[in-house]
Length: 285
Ligand SMILES: Nc1ncnc2c1ncn2[C@@H]1O[C@H](COP(=O)(O)OP(=O)(O)OP(=O)(O)O)[C@@H](O)[C@H]1O
Image (cartoon, rainbow, N blue to C red):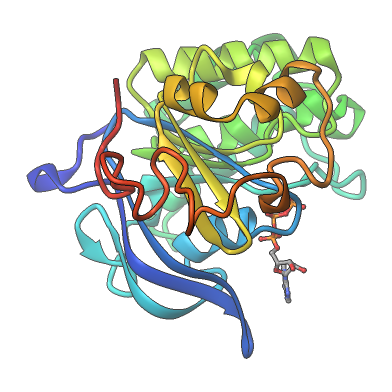
């Protein structure tokens, strides 16, 4: 993984808004992610977490504010290989016959000019092997992906994202719909990536599975950033949310702003206007 040039944040949002057609879903988002941070993005269903990730990638319309990626304005940014993306609820279609290795090799495409034959370089092959090893699927390289479990397919998609050797990995609910055993494997994969310094932004409802990996927590509530701080600050400030997480349940009203003091009147730690935890500041412990 390469570092960022000139020490710029990996992701930098200033007062950004995103939405669909004329509908504004997220407003006033100011957020900066530095190299090496592992940020969990939490929030109730429909609060705008996926919209945030897709907005960063330019897949959801930006309706205001600015987005910079590695210091460059997002609309000028063209080094797409630097951002690995694992989309939400995406598994590999049973209608396409491909081996695990072939799917992961697709991740190398962004590193090559499309008109040049690319599958000839030993380095490509070695990188695909390495990422299969990282996600624990080296022994499945020749297996038809359609025969893998949902959790294994998520790992294939993570390996595919890693194969472009990105500087940041954006993952939208990588552990959703995955059984507990596979969740643990996925958590180990993410821990390995964190140990090698990979910057990550992970949308999740299963914080407890990733607790050892995450260095920072951002909560999206009703289209705004409601909290931005360390896991310690998160837990000390929001006890009943912690209880929900530790029960392992996911409720639609989890982290619902109705269940919390109005952040405008009683700001939570890290909420905009809450004082010491400015959402723009880097909060890596
Ligand atoms: N393609 C779309 N067109 C129009 N509205 C959309 C689209 N995708 C999402 N929305 C709406 O935007 C809002 C935020 O959705 P989003 O998927 O970002 O929430 P989320 O926090 O990721 O939810 P979940 O936890 O259920 O994945 C929702 O009201 C949703 O209905």
